[in-house]
Image (cartoon, rainbow, N blue to C red; front, side, top):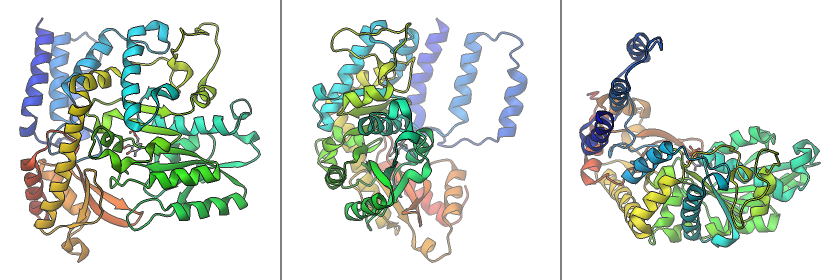
Length: 464
Ligand SMILES: Cc1ncc(COP(=O)(O)O)c(C=O)c1O
């Protein structure tokens, strides 16, 4: 079977040689289209072996290699082999998880993984409902819909227009923008997203939040959702979860912890205490495809109010089962999706292969590399601008402060050399900086040294 042996060879070779490949592509849309359009007119069949070889070449060459140990990027991880195997098997058997009865095995394997991860959150696995989602944005959407269903019994039938009050979602400038998007999707409107002040360390200020909620209440708003982020997108900052939970309790809001990336820290016994209070959240977003090192499409939504989730999503149809075997759940009744791919198999297989302790080791290594990067940057004359125990490092340089070096120019020069990927970032809506995240469990000291070399080269104005 040359097709499958070729694929197996590419998997092994790509993973073995990734460190020697450029991190960034060097291609224009014009060049790529000029190559692809004449070749793929879909007017004649192409042998699958030929097609596969071409797709492998294209993806190996023309993309940012997010699995590269010098991709210091946006929460896109290097992936475990177990995840590649799992996604292949999910495709082979075309597992359909809309209803339990179509794939008892698939549903039960996912359930085991979700229960184990719920335990890491501190949730009672028997007192919660958890489901895989397409990603963190969908899980965050589930939080708002579940909160609406919980708070307003008539919302599901009458809609937001009939609520007689304006539900508000409380975030900070550092929260993920999926909350703005879901405000549109839910019909709450983007003005319902209320930005509470942050403190100097970029965390949501609970005292100022409570003040804002009370002022809003007087103006006709009802606090629906308070979002605490455990690992902000820009700087990996952890909001004060216990204090936010207390504000939610006092004001009657639903407390949602967005741990899309930072949830990974729950696998480490050393880092887990930094997320203390997460178990107080009414719901939690946690993306396995961020810090749990599985391929894309492994979001998770955990909720302590199963009835609210059911109320938010359940429907009755003649062609779908009305009852499931005792203790089982039909996923189409508790998520926005209907047909559902088995996205959780890669989480189950990675978790079973590594064990919780093995996962914790990978997470601890990445956190250690984050700390080391901070030390190396400081020693090389760069200035750290934020602090977190998680491996996101935001930094700048005295030349940038002095106005003799522009952040965008520096990033462009780093990209031009194609040996590392970092990004510009804006903190607190106004502080511009550079951002590097340890996204690969294979990133080592030599990759950190290589990044410093790239930064220094770019700072001196050398494009390549
Ligand atoms: C904190 C946070 N929440 C939610 C999301 C959205 O996750 P996804 O891209 O999986 O939908 C992200 C993405 O980076 C994130 O950083």
